[in-house]
Structures are given as C-alpha cells and as structure tokens.
Length: 280
Length: 280
DNA sequence: GAAATATATCTTGTATACCAGATAAATTTC
DNA sequence: GAAATTTATCTGGTATACAAGATATATTTC
Image 1 (cartoon, each protein chain N blue to C red):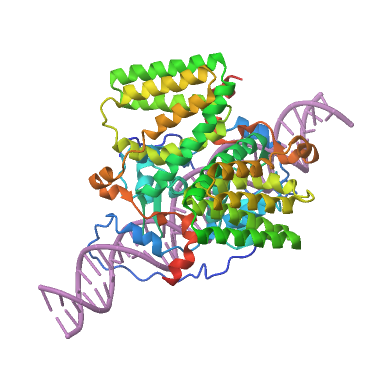
Image 2: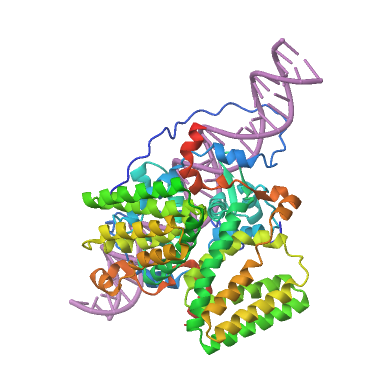
C-alpha cells in the first residue's frame, strides 16, 4: 500500500478539566453569521481529507486492486488516528463509486463497472463539447498561449517517456480549456468522469505511439480554438476522446476480476430496482 | 421543520457480555467474498440515509431556507439517534453543495450559488441532449406509450393544479427518456443538476400558464422521438429546457439572502485558489 | 470422511465522551 | 458610555466503547 503514512500534528494531548464553571447566563447563538467570508478564510485540511485523498489516489492508480479489502481498523493503525475520520473518508469513496460496502461484512475497492464506464465516456464527451465551444468563444490570447505551453510540456514529457507527468499535463490541458470557457463547475464534473475511467485507462496504457498522437490531437484542437472555429474544435475534440473507446473485451479477458458487468452496484440503481429483487 | 420524525426500530437494547471467551485460534479472513451477490441481497436503509433523505427534501423544497443553521445536536434529539449517523448525513449534504460547514462554528443550509446554477443548466442541457438522441434511436413502442401515459398524468395534475404531483410527473418523463436511451447513469447526473436548480425553480413557480406549456413541450419532444427524428427531438428539448433560464436579477432582488454570487463556496474551488488566498 | 452445527472473531453501524476553535454576552477598563 | 477584555458556552472534529450481523474455523454428528 504505497502513498500512505502517519498523520503528523499534535493529537490526543490530554489536559485536566478547567475546573467547575461559574453560573452565568447562556447565550442565544444559532443566528447565521457572515458565512461567505467565514468559509473563505478558514480551510484547514482535516484528517479525513488526507485519508480520502491517499486512498483515492491509491485506487485510481491501481496500487489498490479492485476487490482489495479496505478495513477501517487497519487504516486507523496506519495513520495513527481514530475510526471516525477514516470512516468519513471511506464513505466519500463509496459516493465516488470507488468502494463498495457490504454491511457488517466488509468494504472493498470497487470493481470497474463496465456499464458506468461506457456512460462516463459519453457524458464526458458531451460536457467537453460544451467547454471547448465556450473556450473557442471566450479564450483570451494569453490563455491560448498558456495552453500552447501546456502542450509543449506534454510533448517534452512524452519524449522523456514520463507517463505520469504526461498524464498530468493532459489533465491540465483539458482543465485549461474548461477554464478558458468559464466553466469551472463543468470541469469538476468532467474530472469525476475521468476518475471513473482512469483505472481502465491505466490498463490500456502500453500502446506504442500513443503519447505523440495525443500531443498532435491536442495541438489540432487548440489550433481550431485559436482560429475561432468552434465546430472544428468540437469535432477534433470528439475525435480525440473517441480514441479511448477501445473494445473492452480484451481487457476483461486479461483481468476478469477487475470488472463487473451488471452494475447493480450502486445505491441509486438499487433503489429503483428494489421491487424486482424482492419478487425475484 | 416538516418531514422529520423519530426513527423507529429497536436500539440500545443492552445485554450482559457473553462471558469470557475460551481460548481458540483466530481466523484469517480478509479475503474478498463474492461481493456482487452480497451487495444485491442486503440493502437495509441506514439511519444516516433517512436523515439525509429528509434533510435533502427539506432543503430543496425550501422548507429549510438558505442560511438556516443545521445543528447536529438538534437532529440527534429530533430523530432519537446519536451524532454519528446524523453527521454522516450532513457530510453527504455538504458534498451535494446543499450545506456549507464552517469548522468549529456551524453548518448552514447553502445559499444558492448563481454561478453553479448557470453551469448546472448548461450541463443538464448537454446531458439531456445525449439521452434524447439515444431515446430516439432505442425507445421501444411500449416505452413511448409509457411516456405518453406520463404526459397524460402530468396533464391531469396540471388541470387539478397539483403543483407537487405535476413536478413528479415532470421528473418521471425526463427519467423515462433517459431509461429509453439506456443511460441510467447519465440520468443520475441529470438528477443532481436538477437538485442544484430545484430551489431556484421553486422561487419562480407562480408563472401563469406554465404547466400547460410544459405539457405541450413534452408532447412535442415525444412526438419527435416517436417519429424517430433525433435532431428535431433534441431541438425541442433544448427549447423546453431553455425556458428555465429566466433572468436571475429579479429573484436576487426579491430574496437577496438566498443567493451567493462569488462561488468560492466549494472545497474543489478553494483548493485551486488556495495560493491566492494565502497571499491576499 | 462428509455434512451439519456451533462458536470465536472478524466486519461495519452506532452511541457517547472529550477536545479545540469560534462566538457573543458579561465584565472590565478608560 | 464606548472600547477592550474576559469568559462561559456554543459549534464541529476526534477518540473510544459497544452492538449486531456475517464469516471461517472448529466441533459435532452421522
């Protein structure tokens, strides 16, 4: 289990009770203060955030294989914290469909649901069509130059064979498009779709010539954006994204235990099909 | 606070310890069992699910106004349960952007972030374009008949002036399209977008003649689907969805405290802008 | 020896107690 | 009286203990 370590910081420093409180009147409270500024100022990373980030990273990079048990008690020992924040992190993973919980039995790294995979690819394409079109309309010259720089960095990483940095540049490029199109929220959705597909993508990595091809495709998209040709930019982006849709059968034969085919997996779906299960 | 009550069921039925355990060897465990079947069979609604559902409903129906404090301790008393499941429910609301938490200070029903609203409308349109096009290709005759039935029900509810049932039929119609297009996952995303917009929608409700208009627009969409004209169906759906984009200025003048204009609100954004905050 | 039963001990779900930061009222200071 | 300070008591964040279901091993039964 790489990428996991102890959480530093002073914890469990006990101190005797501050003596008996003198009798004074309580206060009213419960009136909402100026929340806006409040939320901006403070933002300390909680322990659960750290565990969540670590686990998420370990899962999407396949360091934790699908089916691996996620035991809350073990994590408390590894991080030196209690179950409460660990549990919060695990619950967030469940919401991300990265973990499945069997009540009173165990929690496991989620199998890759093929049905969800297919839908995530389609949804992502639809959303990136929006951001690309908007970027073509709104991108400033400086933003376009910034994207060219990202592509150049990606080219350099490709030549260096640095797969991890290459992928980070890839993400940055797509994020820059969304930012230029003024759709930060939609970029977050796209990110979630990417997470769903990420593990599958990693299984398909060793394709010769893939990295230079991606660079060329990115360049083509950006050229269309710079030329303010939105239809062309969208078409090129779609062509780029469609490359991911290889046939899945090969991989599911290679790693049968990594995938799941009937996506009953999820709470949302279970709710709507509950009656069928009760009868059958 | 409507829609909230005690949670039934036997809890806290203590029982003396089963005596000292005799010394026997421990077991190995930690091997993943047949998860797929496991997850299908069991699915009992946890206490946190109930609290989450109730709170979510109260928030999106504006029974709990934006800015209202959500105090975990109060909820424990109302439901007769402990803080742990209450807290889990609240954390899920935070992930849904329906609540904001100020550490050590308070949790509050989230203001409606106008920027998110705009993006949610755009994203929803993009996703429904996908489902409508797919529905046009794949919808069976029975599915089309089912959708006609939904529209008829909606017409009846419109004539009866039953706003709540009307809205439920509206949701059913859009869900039926996604189901016919074989995109249940994308429908879940659309649902999330709807939740984001729902509170705004409720503020704009009293528009005379709105309900019959919606029925006509739904009928137009379905006619295009039945005629297998995907471009027409998409166009009509877009026209239908664009009706929601009224100018926001009116409402933000009427209920200024309900909205928030700078969407720093969210963790995801805060992360990417953290450096700016530190310097400024 | 094989099938059925019993049981120890895993797991997650829940309850409860305590901690530290934040807030507003009470108090002090000028 | 107004501003600064103190202080009680709110809040959410965390630690820990217990409850209840699930599972594999040990035991019994035939």
